[in-house]
Length: 87
Image (cartoon, rainbow, N blue to C red; front, side):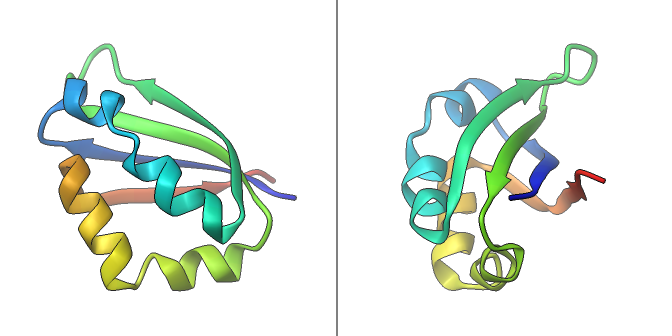
């Protein structure tokens, strides 16, 4: 099971950290062990490290309206999103 890291900017870091939405939408597509991070030098840059059972399933999900709605709810700026896969 690969571990991936995603980082991106958000509108409000406190809101993003408190939101249960990412867990609610990612766990059903096989994402586990979600850990959150904040950038101490850039206040609105955040990240996740997580284990992904099926990368193709996750990437397909990221193209859905449900993913877009979840990102909007959490204040994610999708154009800043970068995925890194453990090598």
